[in-house]
Length: 107
Image (cartoon, rainbow, N blue to C red; front, side):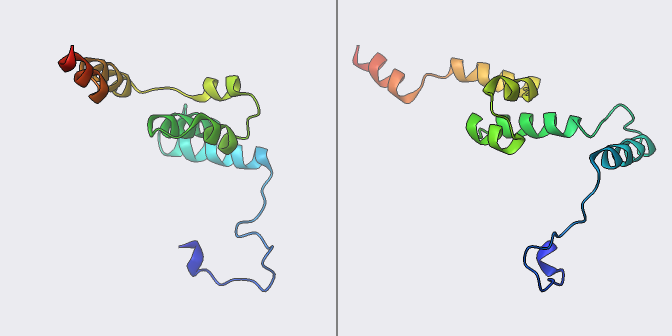
């Protein structure tokens, strides 16, 4: 959709206007409240992005870069795994890996 917008002559011109962070946060809060998502904050989107990327198998280093973190400990504070994702991880323990099943068969 953004590619269909007319391009300005200056290639360094931003596609979207700059906003003050506080103005963006307040606008998001009003929108969330109007949509009935009242406890949702703009900052919650960082947690959601980190969690979604983690559950999709994206590397820790890539998630750190996306969130702008220098310390992996900060990134882990943003990563939350859904219960269903944890159940899948536990089920992986029940299935022997290819290497394990071959070594068991040889023993």
